[in-house]
Length: 269
Ligand SMILES: [Zn+2]
Image (cartoon, rainbow, N blue to C red):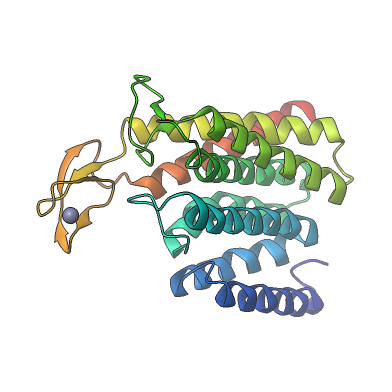
């Protein structure tokens, strides 16, 4: 294994092609999402190796399947992607983990970068599952900042069920990571997954409630988190311009990765 080994590249290509065939058949991602996932998956496979890729694919499959179940069984939520992921979603969730995997492949310090990778992935996984599972909550969610009741799908809205979903994601990731990688003990893996995951998903909600831009449609009058609605540019009513749900996700994974990197440098040396 290793990025200098031609068989690693062939193995990565073969497995990614198989996963993309499945993704296309089940419409997990759109065309842009496929290209972005391919780049993220390929870099993680060849620089990180099989263990990194297995953790990634666990996140990918659990979240796309949960999204499909939520869209089918529960409710379509305004502003949320209709179960098909685009490239922005993939980049927002995968960028920090990809950087950690490449750094791991290029350096001798595999334990620290594997920890960073898990921390970034854990933030993305916890937040994605908190969103998907939280949308199945039967009651009204509350805004993380003011604790006022808001509509499902509002940026920064939290539910007890969502937190359960996040914990579920982190538990799955910790179990998978400790089984596939023997360089870290289960307790080390648990610390590296749970702390960044919990902090990452909470920061994601706080940023969503505060700095994320919110808009109102000029045509239908609905509040939305996208800068255009009904084919027209929407009016910005709150938050910071250009900070959208993907930017918030990216920031949360950078914070998650940084926490794991710091923990690893203190405790794994
Ligand atoms: Zn509209």
